[in-house]
Image 1 (cartoon, rainbow, N blue to C red):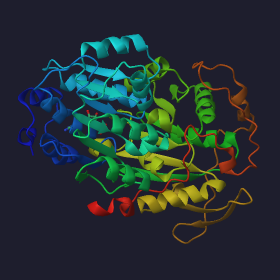
Image 2 (image 1 turned 90 degrees about the vertical axis):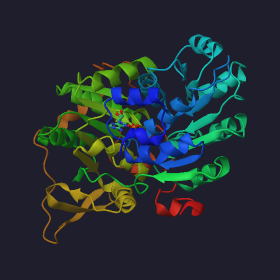
Image 3 (image 1 turned 180 degrees about the vertical axis):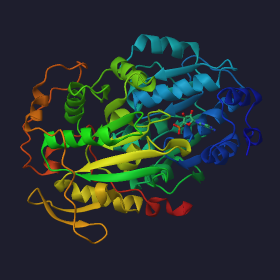
Image 4 (image 1 turned 90 degrees about the horizontal axis):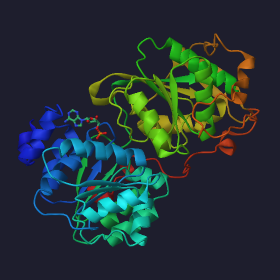
Length: 462
Ligand code: AMP
């Protein structure tokens, strides 16, 4: 299939060609004609599927007619994080190179003055995070009555981050007659409710079963005992054992673990950076760019900071923890194996994470192979590893012993040689006795929300 048949404008088609895209991805082929026909769209798609272009390309085509007025953006794209917003802006700038359209970014962590100036000049496409947008609105710097198209991107992440009330407020501020494009990787009940409320007779486009993982990713689980130093040694062992590793992202549930793992790897001589929600915008962008430019090989990140990062070719994803929300596993490992490439994902599992591990297997509807063919049962209550058994029914091999594991690796945490000054001060008094969920200091926490799956696709769409 070619882009020419989707109804996009000539200028946009030229830009698509210049981007090197030869054919539309499935979400683009399905969604673009509907957006061009001014239909509301409910897109169920993960990042990495080309979903950004599925809404930006038709928006740019539609915007060719008409002009922007001061403080009245013509279209609005809502993104949950600054990184995602900046990434969408980057894409838009590329796709709109043949057009005279004004694109503006309204995100926290940057000066209000510059953003106000841009709004005053008239904006065709405004990309915003919900908090900053409402802030500007309350200061009387922006009018929402001219919005013709509104995009709510990464809706399930908006939910995780507690943005749903903000989204509801914003939806009520923009004209009822607007066109709404709504994207989410998963469809938990809260998102279904939001879609029912704010979309009018939407077309549903879905590129994969909600919460499925790509076949091109080889997934492994790795057993670890509880102590921090063993987990870090295990991580290094995995990195060392990954012959094909070009670059990798290491996901941690907690901000303090992002800092600890970053310092540990740095001390062990790895080329590494860190990304978490407490870092200011400039440091986040700088770290991300060094990773994108291959100046660092490994990036330790929290889910919030890493959501939807547009890093085309990550060879490995390491889950330092079992994510608390099973959907996060899908998002995390979705950083690799993109656009048909192969990828490898590891997940370190400690005894108390058994429940989370089971939830992931049931969400993705497949068994994750234990490394070294080891199926492990954990005695979660005792916090000890329980009876092991082989996945093939035989006797279990012990978990691979970390070659370089040293009890005195623990002092990592007291190392003051931190390159990222904004890394949070971490507390290493874990002791390994407390249950996992009592310890979590998640950057966002919504362990209670339901897992996405077919049963959560709105009834009217099933
Ligand atoms: P997204 O899912 O929007 O984050 O896009 C993932 C990656 O796919 C980005 O690096 C895009 O530049 C790239 N991409 C988007 N559309 C296409 C296409 N039709 N052909 C090849 N690459 C694409």
